[in-house]
Length: 136
Image 1 (cartoon, helix red, strand yellow):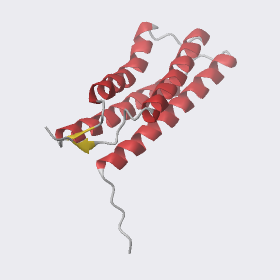
Image 2: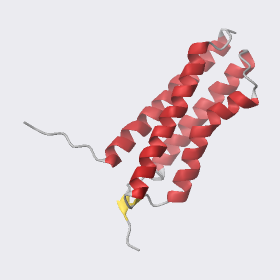
Image 3: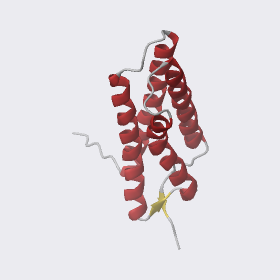
Image 4: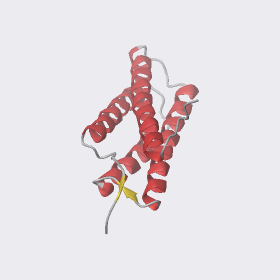
């Protein structure tokens, strides 16, 4: 029987891909609410919280790999981007003071699509890894 082994690099990649897809889904959802002139629902706020938790999970796996002595090529850039992705959705909620109108939905849609494109850019520019042991 074949045994499937997943190292933290694989887990990190899977979680980051889920993060990208979740960003796209949030953007589509927010844009559809704005197009229909619907207020932002409590379900959407829960999804925003889930987005931040997912980004935090990716960051946590990155911290664990760093503590194990693994590094991507540009570790400072990685951590700056990941901190942005964890904090920006709750930050926008705070900046908008919990508004749930059409303009807030547009702002969340733009931010979600921006975060998805930023995440894809991180992947393309190999900011995400590969994580490898470094020689000091």
